[in-house]
Structure formats: C-alpha cells, structure tokens
Length: 323
Image (cartoon, rainbow, N blue to C red):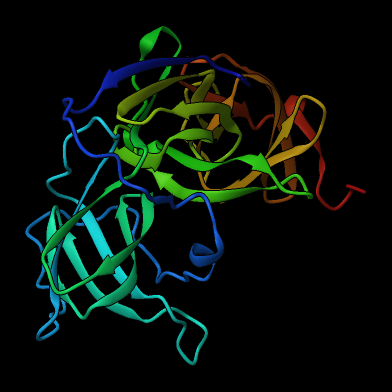
C-alpha cells in the first residue's frame, strides 16, 4: 500500500436460510449465451422502493424471481433491478428487453419459452437462463456479492472533511497497457457500494492535487468490508505579504514545485488554498514584475497558513529579466 494504512473490518450481512441451490451465471463470468447479453446502462445504485409493474403477457406463465447475496442468505427485499431478455438477438444484434422491475422479489407473466434474466444490486449482478411454461414457478439468483464502505482520516484519527474526499474503484487486474478499468468514480465516504465478491483496486484522493493513496481490497460475499485510509497530507493557505502577518497582496499567481523541481499546481488569487501530500516543496509567487519564492515542508495533518514575503531580499528576479 502506498502512503497510508488500511484497516479492514468485516461484518456479516444477512441471516442464514436454507434454499435449493440454483444454477446461475455470475455477471462477471461469461458463456455463449451471456456473451451475447448487451445490457442497457445501469445506474450505480438500484433505486429502493416498491416493485414497478412488469410487462405482462396475456395467457403466459407466471414466474416469481428472487435474489440473495449468498446461497445461505435471505432473499433481498429491496434495491434490486430485474431485466428479462429474449434469448434471440434482435435486428440490432442486441437481446430484446421483454420486461423489467425494481424492488425485491418480483412476479412476471411471460409467454412460454426461454429467457435470460439479469438481476443487479448496485454494481453487483448475476445472469440466469430460465424457461417459462404454463404453470407457475419460482427462480432464485445468487449474486455472490457483498458491500464496501470507505472512509479516510489524517494522522491521529483526525477526520477529513467529506467534501474534500473521494474514492474511485477499479478492477484489480490491469490490461496490456497497465491500465485498470474504472468501475465507480467519485464514491463519497461512508457510502455502501454493492459489488460482486472479488478484489478491487481503490484510490483515495484528499483534495485535488497529489494526496492519493492506493490499495487492493477484497470484497467477500454476504459481508460488509469497511476500509479506513490514513492520509499523510495537510491543507495549506498561501498568501504574499509585505511583512509577517500583513495583508495578502491581490493579483498574485502561484506555482508549486516538488522537492525535485517538478510542477505540482498553478493557481491565481490573493489566497491560494490546496491540499498537498507530505513532503518538501518550493512555493513561487509572481506579482506584477517581481517573482518571490519560499521553500516549505508539508507535515501530515498540520494545516497551516504559509506567508511568502514580498521583499527585495526574497525576490528571485524581474519577470522581464527571466530566461
């Protein structure tokens, strides 16, 4: 793990129920039938509430669809999105959507024949092939899914303002170019994300510059995984002044360089605020024809106001005389 510590807490979600083991196709797996399944876009979180009215078929068979996180778990009562597709592709090469429903356990009236059913629960999902006859029947899908809850603190357990903290969840494995597929961007702290069981690459960003921590986290079916990140960073507010404690000079542009001289961020304003990862930096302030600078060290968890003195002794050069 880079630049911080993850503390994982697992909590079992759901009671045990005895059920008949169904045959299903996980949404993250593929076979010949599921490979043809081109689903419409699915929102990050399935809306909770009562089931919407599914598409009915006069004279069809009644089928009751339910889903659970694990084979031993209870049926999910809310938050599911059901989609029923015909097995044969349409003229556009996609499987036609026959019926859909939101909520928990749902009942559909469908013409006799074969279908592909997809159940999504947040970003978790499973697909199953079903056959509908004239008689009523029930089918159950096992999502093999759990939850992930993310948060972050500064050294000593100091809370980070939620508005300045975001998480992004990626697939754990990278492609041939070393890139990972983004699953969910901009996840808020303490939001529960539903995912199929497996390992995910999580990126925590404090602020918008370089306070970033990465880690691989495993989500287990039927459990809630809570991960807390410890960021080593601080928030700085910079101002150009003519004397210590003086008023900030307006119309100032700022450049922040890393200890190795690489550009980190450029800003404009009398007060420039940003979050920086722990380390050494050079602050450069430009006002009118003059450039001033100051070397500064960021200590994790220590938010500070940083003053750059606009004095001849602190001047780097005239702008016109710079190379």
